[in-house]
Image 1 (tube, chains in turn blue, purple, green):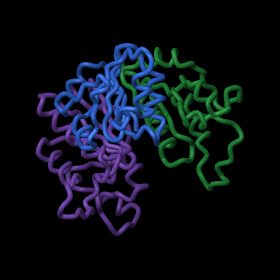
Image 2 (cartoon, chains in turn orange, yellow, red):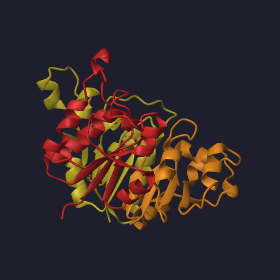
Image 3 (spheres, chains in turn cyan, yellow, green):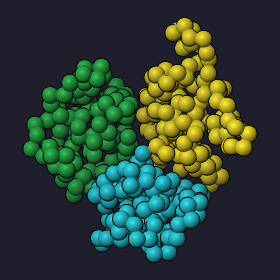
Image 4 (tube, helix red, strand yellow):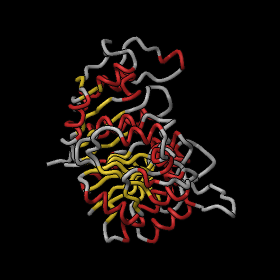
Amino acid sequence: MTTLHVLNASPSNAAQLSSCLRLMSAGDGLMLCGEAVQALRDGSAAAQQLLGGERAYQLYALEEDVLARGIDAAALSVTLVDYPAFVALCVDYARVNSWT
Amino acid sequence: MKFVISVLSSSNAPSTRRALRFAQAVLAAGHDIVRVFFYQDGVLTASNNLVVAQDQQDIAKQWQAFIAEHELDAVVCIAAALRRGVLDHSEAQRYQRDTVNLAEGYQLSGLGQLHDALQQADRFISFGGE
Amino acid sequence: MAKSVLLISRHAPWAGSDAGEALDIALAAGAFDLPLSILFMDDGVLQLLEQQLPRMLEQKDLSANLQALPMFGIEQLYVAQQCLNLRGLGDSCLAIAAERLDDQHIQQLLRQYDYVVTL
């Protein structure tokens, strides 16, 4: 039973990303929205965390947040989603764990 | 699928707008929303006393309209609401406060309503923080 | 069969309302006899420490609520060992009995519940 983890805090302010990466299982999803999309900035420490390791999870980001911040997410294989796709992800994964 | 959505921030937080857009997409996709549960600072989204600048989105008003349009069960945690100063008529009388500021369409109730909704639903998602 | 909830409590005891409001969710589940377990992680592990004096901050002592959990039927408490270690508390005695889990066991724990609620 897989989990979609949803993060929204800036990677520089909060422990969300590092903590989340530690408790994710293979097959889980990681959805970045709000300030959490800053982790997609190429060359950032947070992007290194996302790139590092075997990455047994699927990475998603809320498209409006990526576009709003002018982030070029090409370096990381991230699926940009709109709200209908976000809902569909919540259906596909067995549970959603939102971090605040 | 049946969703329970929890709102944990005031209407000024980006997460509360995100919660609304998500909720709209849930219904547009043909799913159901068992309950929207407002907890922590989310109770402030249920205030009828907010004044939003003309050039800004009034997310609290939009939430209220969405709830009314779809006749959703919108529950505001009573303990969280009282400690943040959001009161309905009955609580204002009980505690002898001057202001009734729980917006129309919302009900004050306990955390039992959150658990009741979880037992009925298939998916839970919360929107809080920024 | 009732759906189960894993509550993840991540905030320090008096750093705002989060710790108390997370605990309230647990107590409500207990009052309705619903299956709920709590995992303390990140700063949430600090809720379990001994010898804290909330009265210095004129704050309510949450440990009374934590100690009441078994009376409400909430008996499964877990704490992230790695989070204790990161805070120099790896070997500390905890005021509340909680099973220490490493990251791998926490990953397994999450998969056992119908819902995960993180506050």
